[in-house]
Image 1 (spheres, rainbow, N blue to C red):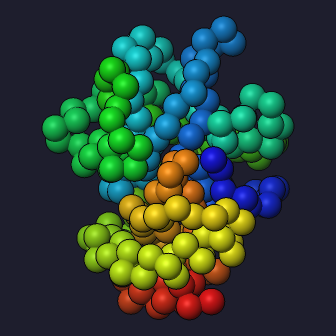
Image 2: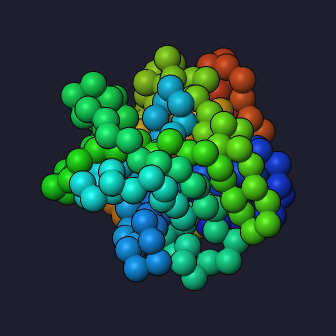
Length: 212
């Protein structure tokens, strides 16, 4: 279930990054006749999408990840053009993040989408401006614990910001723009009012979000 955030036609890299971080499900398009739904997480060290995919994906030089998961009927969807590279699940921490977020993976191989360009409507940006490393990666575990120490406050924040009644919400990720929260229906996104630059600012933003 996608987060309830307003559409935004701001062409800035920050707006594109917020849009990417809001979504965890999308449609992978290999060709006009070959599209399918996917769930993904972002690699902390690069911000590139990591996801389980069928082996035929690696034979394609180009593919497009369209967000959100109704993207084919959504004219202002975010489109990430790139190439899927194979990754070793035993060496890539993002695969464990995917499993923690979504549960058991389907019978597929793991891939990383190396994004070259990002497009929304008529605006096109270099992928390097949109897919960014998480500056809080080293402190992310402690920040998630900070969120999960107040489960009722976390549930109220989901209700207030996303207009959904959260059933046992559990923070699984924190970055400069917000918090990824696992719920019964999947992942949702809580956003900070302004981007944070370090762990101290993130802790303060979490406390503010949960105290509202």
